[in-house]
Structures are given as structure tokens and as C-alpha cells.
Image (cartoon, rainbow, N blue to C red; front, side, top):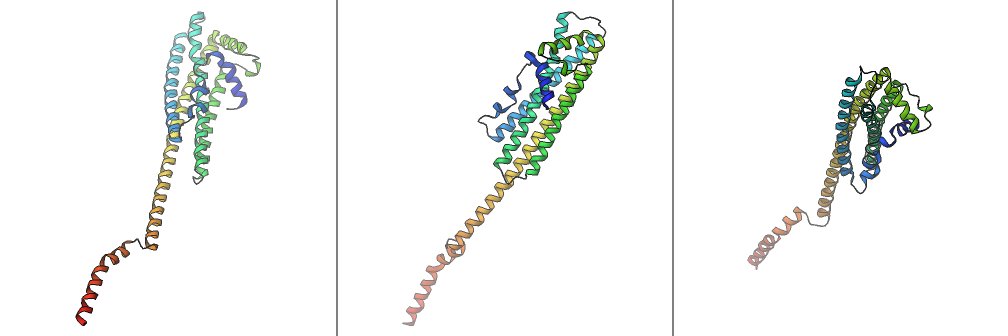
Amino acid sequence: MSTRVRRIVAVLLGTMLVVPACADAGGGMTGGATLPEQIVQEATLIQSKISGAERLVEQIQQYENMVQNMVTLPQTLMNQVLQPVDQLYGLVSQAQALTTNAINISQQFQNLNAGFNPQITAEYSSQYESISQGLNNALNTLIQTAGLNPNDFANQAQAQQAIANAMANPNSRNALLQGAVAVGQQTTASLTQLYNLTRAEAQTEADWRKAQLAQTTQQEEMNQTGNQMLFGSNPLNERITTRGGTLDSTKNSLLSNVD
């Protein structure tokens, strides 16, 4: 997410953010966990955010249908309508954090496994960045649809007042809610893509590790066989040793007959 967009999100979120992104989508999630555990945690979080995005889209659509023909809104209803919109901003921020976290996990794997093709890691990172950019674009579109200029906001209170003003106007309100639905749908699609991509990368890494283990095991078996042959502990020597007693017995018998 660009610095400008991050600033916009921070201003618009304020105290309305339901779950801070760093609490469940950043570095704290991976503390003390192995890479496979981190991937499982990441996928689980993404799934929960997909459900959250779908729920918010439904709520915003319901409010959109409810208030589209209303000229004025009671303050209590205004607060109810604004709540899922504010939560949606928070969810976009959390989705951004999850894409960053996926890149970090991917890089951890690359750092710990130097033999893994770095081009594969770079390709996954590029796709994660593309998802992040899609979220940026959706958020920018919503801000523009609401007729808001982020550069005009000196503080959080001004941003909230600008949103409230836009919601008070039926035309602006309808456009804002329609835009919020579009952002919610884009967020759902982006999170679904992120979930599938994370699982695909995890499978790619697991297949590589399995191949590496098989190769290592095969090499160890070859080394063991070679050592056995060099130091006389191989099946051929065992057969010769086993038959040695018979050969010695036969030789002694022949010598006895000669005497």
C-alpha cells in the first residue's frame, strides 16, 4: 500500500477499526511458530476475513436498499449505516497486512532453503503485490466516488465530518454505499485469491521439501552401500565368509586323504 493511501486509511479509520491489523495479521501472529504453522495460521486468518467481508457487503447492501429513497436520515440510523462502512476500511487494511505477511513468510522459506528456486518465490511475491494493488485501487475508487479529497483532511475529525456530510446528501450517500459494496466485493475476491495463492505456494514448498528429503535419503543409502563395500561389510563378503567354513572343511578332507 502506498504511503498516501496508508495515510488516508489511517485518517478514515480512527477509533472505528474493529480489529487492529497488527494484532492478527502481522508479525505477532508468527512469533515462535514454525513455517508450516505460520502458513496454517495465515490461511485460517484469511478465511475469517473472507467471511467478514461477505457479511459487511450484505449489511451495506441492506442499508443501501433501506435508505436510497430517504431524503434525511435520523442520527441513530446514520450511525448504523456508517458502522459497516468504517469496518470495511478496517478490513481492507487487514487484508493489506495479510498480503504483506504472506510475502514475509515466503521470504522466510527462501532464506532457510537457499536451494529453492528464488524465481518461484519472486513470482509468488509479485502476485501478492498485485492483490495488494487491487485493494488499493478499490479503496481509491471508493474515496473518489464519495467526492472526498484526502489532501483536504487535516485530522480525523475533518475526515469523519466529510463522510457524514456525504452520507447526508442522498446522491452522495447512494454513491458512497454503492462504492462501499464494490470495495467489499473486491476485498472478498482479493482475499479469496490470497487464500488460494497461499495454499498453492505452501503445496509448492511442501513438494520441494519432499523431493529434497527423497534425494537426501537416496544419497545416504548410496553412501552407506559404498561404505559397506569398501570396508568389507557388504553382502558379497558376507557370502564368502559364510562359505569359508565349508571350503576349509573340504580342503582339510582332501589333505587327510592324501596323507
